[in-house]
Image (cartoon, rainbow, N blue to C red):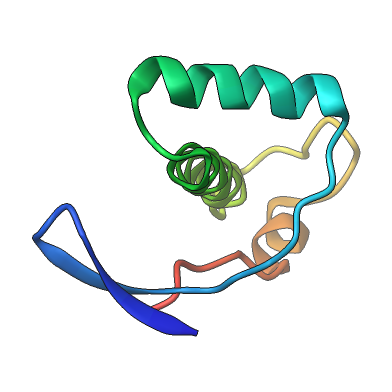
Length: 87
């Protein structure tokens, strides 16, 4: 891991990983990165952050009095672990 300054205001730890994706998708992202004048890595970081945010938002426990559409009670749903943003 390495520590880097993002947008000159927050410190964060980045983790390197390998991404496998269809060539057409990578070419599309490369073209968008070039259009923006940013590195492909920046565009990929944005996409990963957006997906993680959406997953965390979707998995937040909800309190309710009725059963869910799949037959699970609110207690069962809220007992499931929720992906937390790292601190």
